[in-house]
Length: 166
Image (cartoon, rainbow, N blue to C red; front, side, top):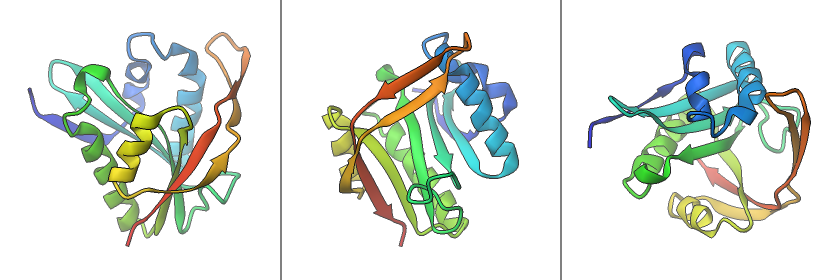
């Protein structure tokens, strides 16, 4: 396999975050998140392979309107983490998470939180292997405006997990 490069996304990467249309319904959400990147309250990380393009992505809120998730000082929140299926179980997800955690430590963050779907047992085991601890449940209600301008309401019951970046 060609080398995998992990870097922060730039504006030219936004269309590629849609994974050839699979996630085009998140187009506005991605654009809004990139605006938060420009304001310094979020990060978008991508993994890419020469010749194969984008193979992984992860969003990080540094500060949001729910300080129990990301307060801009001590705690950040990871979401939208995915690796294309054909690249899973090759250590790429672990490398992405390690890169993000190292960056957050350099920024002075002491804790990172995330939610994982209660029915996503593989992802929960993955996060536990990386040192994340389950601290409770999250009802998982959220919404977004899709690429056609329609509000989409989501209910994904989740487990809240936290890792201390000591």
